[in-house]
Image (cartoon, rainbow, N blue to C red; front, side, top):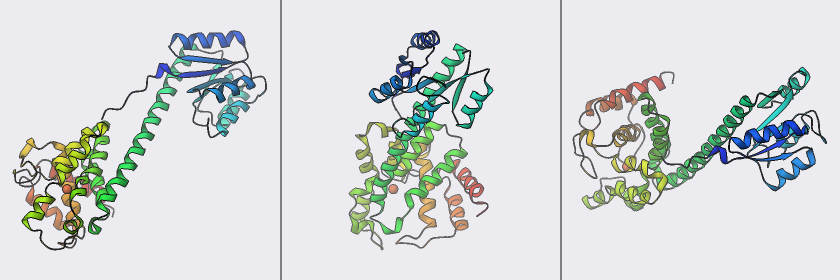
Length: 329
Ligand SMILES: [Fe+2]
């Protein structure tokens, strides 16, 4: 999934140090690395900068005019607007007491004086990178939560499938972890598994909730949901990689599935993987057309249908993953 990467070197850094010579050296070093640097020699100036233009990182001497004993650090951490800004504290290396204060306060990073400028650059870069990763993770989490609400709204129209989306996502994740999928693929899976039935929005309630067999016309409508879901997602750029889950989770290994009737490895792996998780959950929970079946019986069924409905290589891996995860239940 494509997310913009954050150019770390375009970040703004605030340097607070009362020793003019040292401050200049720090500023020069960081500017050569491509950072935008603001500087302050006392607490009042530093706070003014913070209020005007929120920096992406702060480097500050422990004792600055207007505050000492890491008072500036505590002020920044105590303010909800500033508390997440990475903070590097410069402590007097010879003064064990200063280092101890920094440790006691839980300062994430401190550099002893005299400063090793290579270390300074490394720490700044690592901190900014970590901070950018955290921001992306938070945005990701927000997307996922939004999608979950949306998917649950569609699912919620059908009282029998309560919790289906959460469980299918979990089973699919177990299988993907057993296959040692990389992080990026796991992330797409999290979105795809939650959205797989989003196209059911086009299926009327009376069909979705019907306890008996569907008429051929109703069934035709039901079979539209992967395509309908694909259409909904096609306009959302960052969800394009999740399309394979939506489009292909009802295809079958022998070619008898829908909507395209693809067979074998022509079915994208995402569809083959989700099909197993989807059916496993459908059979182990109560549905209008059948009561929940015991797990052992469903595993037998999966084995029987491997190479017919399900990918014959993925099925045993799924069963093994299921047994590993639920051994202590
Ligand atoms: Fe479906």
